[in-house]
Structure formats: C-alpha cells, structure tokens
Amino acid sequence: MRIAESVAAVGKKPIRVAIVTPVHNRREITLQCLRSLSAIDQSGMEIHIVVVDDGSTDGTAEAIAQEFPDVELVRGDGSLWYTAGTNRAIEAGLKWNPDYVLAINDDSVFEPMFLQRLVACAEENPRSVVGPLLLLWDYPERVFQVDARWDTWYGGWRHRHDLTTGNVPAEFFDVEIIVGNCVLYPREAIDEVGIMDEVKFPHYGDVEYTPRMRRAAWRLLIEPRAHVFCQTTTVPPRLRSLPFPQLYRALWADRRNPHNLRTHFISRWESAPSRWQGVVAFIASIMKLGMRGIGLHRT
Image (cartoon, rainbow, N blue to C red; front, side, top):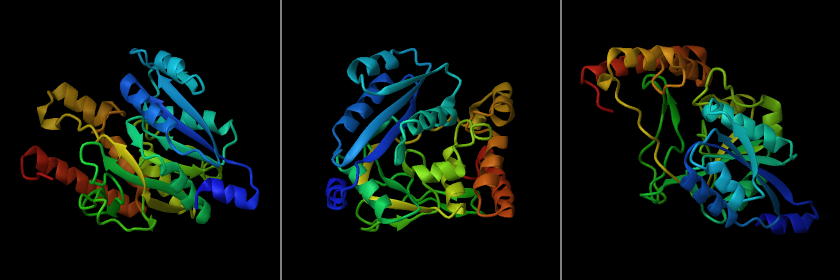
C-alpha cells in the first residue's frame, strides 16, 4: 500500500520526512542527488531537505540555493567531516519536527518509489530502522554494502560480495548493521539513542550508530524493493606506498584517516556484539594488516 492510500484510509496527517546530508566540493554529484530526490513519489508525505555544506569552495552552496531554493542550507567551515556534518544536518532536520529522518550520502540516485517503500516498511514494523537495497552505479544488479555480518576472527564487519538483485530476499529482512549511505530513522529512535558519536568517530560515525540502536531493541531491516544507486567507496592509499612520516600520521596522528589504528580499535570496541569480540577482532585486523604489508594477504 502506498503511503498516500494509508494516510487517506485512516485520516492521518501526511508523514513528515526530513532528508539530510553533508556535502563537500562535489557540486555536480550533489546537484544530481537533489534532482533525483525532486523526482521521487512524495504522495502522502511532507518532505524537507537539509544540506550541510562543509566549506565547499566549488560553488556547491550557491548552486543549490539557485536551483533548489526550498532546500535548507547549513554552512560549515570545512572541519566537520562525515559524522559531524551528518549530525548538524540531523539536528537541523529535527527542528522541523519530522516523523522520520532519512540520512543519505550525496553520491546517490534514487528509484522514484524508494521512499514510499522505506516508510511503508517502517510503518508496518514498529521500532524498526530501515535501509534500502544499495546498488552500484556502474553495475546496477550488484548489491553494495548490504547485510554486513560480524566476524570476530575475520577482524570485524565482513561485507558480503555475493548479493545481487536476483538472489536477495523478496521481502524485508533483518540485518546486524545498516551502513550510512541511506538510512530511514524514526524520530523516536534518534530521541532515544542520540546522534552519532562525532568525537570517537569523526569519519565513520555510522559504524556504531545502527548497532547502538539494535542494542536498544530497535530492529534493523532492509527493504529490498527500495533501490538506491551509489558510487563504490573510495579506496585509501596503500600503507606500504607511504613514506614513514605519512605512515605515522595515517596510523596514529590523524584520527580522520581511514587507516588510523585508534579509530579502528574504537570502532570495533563500540560496534562489536561484546567487548571481548571487539578486542579479538582488532587483533585479527592488525595481523591481516601486517600480512598485507609483507605480501602474504591479498583480500
């Protein structure tokens, strides 16, 4: 049932959804995302979009203001990064008093019915946080970063690479974590557990956010009929290619670097099913890192 039909059937007010995203120096990608959102089915809903522009120097904010004057723009100074940028966007969106907050990445293109299906899934399943099927731009049949599972001896979260649009379940299914590319949060879930931890996780705040909700008895679901197309994650430079000063900075000094060991430890400590599993997984990841360094581990 479409949200509009559900709303009309019970005489409810339209469902309010705040769509929020942080952006930085990706003007054309950001505009593509907003154009895609402008084409989705919004029947039975009220939509408010919040974009946190974290100090872009490529004219992103100006282009948004010109083409999408109804989008709320929040300016940052370039120091927010992913987690703080998302948090500022969520905070701005909550002031609009939504029923749901949809947090997205701006490198996303949306199938027109995706939000109808996400909201319908959440409405039909109380205390649920819902994500869509993430698909790759270049290979739209391939499922991307959906249904990651905790594997202590592997070193933490293990993403599945065997999923396609042809072999995922036909109906919504439970998962252990939902990555932050696109997540529908009920307002009550955010009120209950708070926003992302931008102090411990300046760059990957989503790694512990939905597991935190799951520990608070929120169900994590994927709605496979909701399709969102994304870019693949950018791979950081290999450690063995870095000179020692940059290697030290990457592994220890720079908390925002994807390789930072302190961030990796905290992410496992906070998102693991138990503390001991987090510690063991971190040790396993360090062993894998060492084997990669000497060429013994390729995956």
